[in-house]
Amino acid sequence: MASGWSKDGAVQDQIDASLAEAVELARSRLHQGESAKQCEECGAGIPEARRKAIVGVHYCIACQAVMDQQQLLVSGYNRRGSKDSQLR
Image (cartoon, rainbow, N blue to C red; front, side):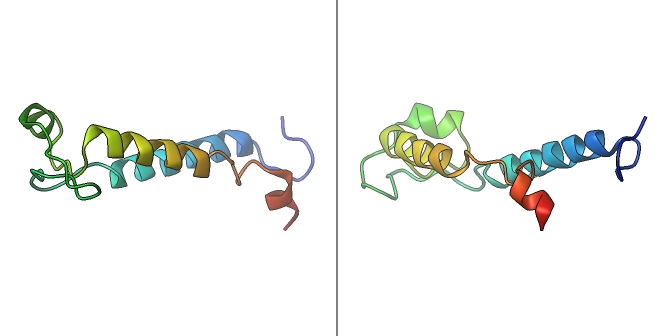
């Protein structure tokens, strides 16, 4: 049962689109290529166990943790679901 001007299943379409977008973003952030032996940010050595566990790693654990934390701060707002985006 649709309400207003939306078609049947519009909410599910929006959920599916949001999920597909999140999956694509996650895939784009996957490491690729050969792992570095030294961190590109601070120059510290990257342990062999980390290089084997995560293919294509370029940062030490400390620098990666800082980058992950910064990414969480930036991506906390769902623009698609905001009222402002629906008014434009």
